[in-house]
Image (cartoon, rainbow, N blue to C red; front, side, top):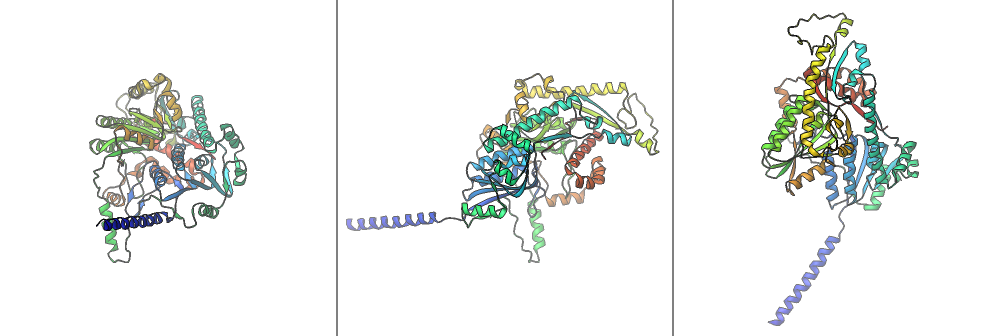
Length: 605
């Protein structure tokens, strides 16, 4: 019996040995390596677009979606490397920061290769976060620094016979200067210089850290400015000159000839629809209708509430062509109220990318934020700009994150109107106006303000300004490094400068803010839910069928439709500035007090 037991034991050992060897052989068999390819082109939005089961994302990819996919590639063991292909892409400096941070994190786990045909200073700063940077032969390397410009339309208004009337609280509150002046005031010029100095230093430091050189070397590169890819390689700005085909050959040599390029890594796959099936259309509609019904999650979540674009009263009018520009008070209030009431949502990250706008709408949003705070924490993450009304809605956050190049502050108030009588007289049109009440016509467009009207309006604005400053003082408390009067008055700062002044708490990305928030409420396994929730294709279609659009009544929509085709063809970036100015005039039509910041554009080519 003992012999049989020993024999059985020996057989078991032999079987186990062969089984282990077989497993090791199976494990040793090389899998097809995956290279995740990310193509950067078009506009990267801050707020996620609507998602549909058949159409995927409507519009451009969001920054958060792109960062999430990059992080997923960094953690996926099947991914051998990451490739970033730069095309014609529109990025703010703050978006460059956040993308760089994620690329550097991924690059610590696996190789990140970047390739471009042409780069500017900002996009070059982004690509240097990769472990290896290459460019096409004879490619353009325009690393010639940054410039800033502000829009002024006073000359146009003079030509039209329109007299702008604006008052401000704070001598640095320059948002109205685009209508009142033909060039910067001394205060605005001073402010723009300190902004540009800070932005330039941040970009130089990004490049210096990634290319492992001193900032002085980067400034020397920038002073020369213009390189071909060949001369850029000689000067150590890039690592290789190669075509896309040569890059692929390099990847195969480095990671295996059988590698698979995945150009849609991490993207949601559309369902398969059998178009040969005569009932395919019914299948499509059934899919659309089922996807339009919200599904309830039982998982703990962090809500990311986006305040994106100019702050406006009311609610957005959505259509198949996209929602109205701006963050609307009613939409944001409802989103925050919903977030407050949902028990599975444990905390909120308020993502702000807004130059401000309506004072009343800003107060409505801030009140909704404070209501959420009675039940769960609210952390603020600032995007490219969170100034004036954008800072107003942020200042009560329990912790405020900003990128080093975020534009923020602009604590001040603007009020104004356009007096158009001279314009109408020029074309032979006259209006006869009757009034009852001493100040009945204070906001009519027929004439400029009298001295008495200006005095009364300034008193009203000063009260709004006082509320704004008090919110900042109450929200920031002893974190403020200077008296509020030394930081208000319309002064605009970068995130880096705001940190030094105590207007924000930490330099960090949206992902940093989310990670901090999760830690505050002891969450490890959680989902991200985005608000306001975007309507998908079927919901927008049904809304369009049921509601009459009102966008054609907006000043910006009417003027923009007339001039946009020519302007966008001739000078699209400046056309975007004019669009911003028209949106501010929209706000003037409905309200006379605004918390808005100047229309600035950062040029890097």
